[in-house]
Length: 139
Image 1 (cartoon, helix red, strand yellow):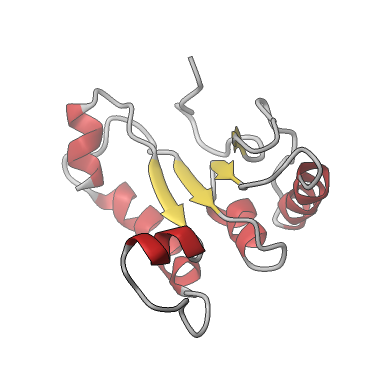
Image 2 (image 1 turned 60 degrees about the vertical axis):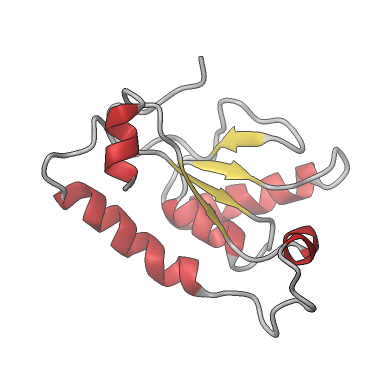
């Protein structure tokens, strides 16, 4: 489906993946409680998704950037460093510097340049320097 949307949108798709749950989402879905434990699927799914995107025929119009939303310092930010191209951290002006520092440490640990091109608190930002050609950039 991502490939089809990428073609229809002339290469403007960003594939977004959440790392957990938000109380507001649970409430809006009329679920009575939060999950008993945070979902752990993104860690297993991301390598498969990235691999599958490279094998599609016809191929996507370019490498589809992966946006990961979440702010967990141990697991989520590590996933962002390993697999993400864009991070939405749900941070505040006060919490952003610490989250960005943790993400930079994870990027360094996996061999990616942690220098972002468009970093702002409480917004989406590009993660690490791209490791792929044809990187999509904000207009």
